[in-house]
Image (tube, rainbow, N blue to C red; front, side, top):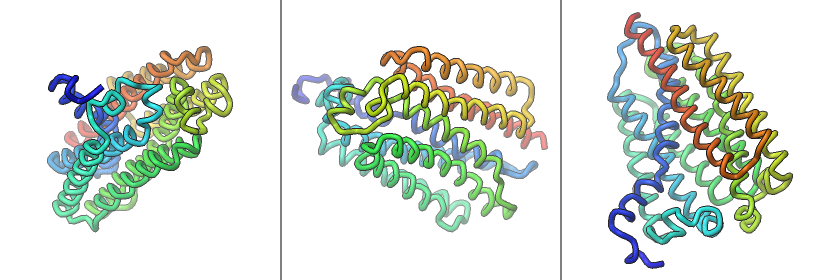
Length: 306
């Protein structure tokens, strides 16, 4: 199918969907979460800087999503033929140019953060490491299966460490470990999500030579391992509730999310149906985002109230 057979609206929407904006928003929100959680009580919040952090983190993630679709174009012909590249709404050459532009904008925003806050280049360095490791995953490490899942988890932790480093340099206080601990829980959840993501893609991953848990050991084992890491997320969420001393409304939301994650873990053990696995990974993205926003709003209220 040629580009001419797609409407301008379909092509335009493809340039939006290929960014996987929800993933990007979660990444940017994680960095904001760590910054706010490690900000001293009584400190005035710079919302413009937080917006720049959100946008930079989002775009670093989004450029990786573009290159992920480029790297996966052959297996996506089987697993997801509706995506922009296999459906030929966006050509590979155009996608490469688009990915480079998005990456450059992310780096420019990271530079603005460092200049605005007088930081020693940690935003630019983090963006470069984060973006490069994600693309290393896309083109090399993904085929290693579980090791690729772990790399994604480490990238999640890096976002939380960045937030703590940001506060360390800006407010000249000791390094705050709480966001990193929460980041480890989030990383566990992301590893679980990555394992579960392999369930709908077994056929395409086999053809591409990707050694995912689902390909190597079958859906049942992949479901159990994915659930195990989701339990790490639920446990971390419970620990974070205790550490953060949440207000009652925030506590209720956090408990609800932890119970939901436990339910998803049990469900994926019971059934590894590809459609359910896909639904689970999408639900988990929303859970990550709501969980972070819940803690962010709670922390902002504490900062404002002093």
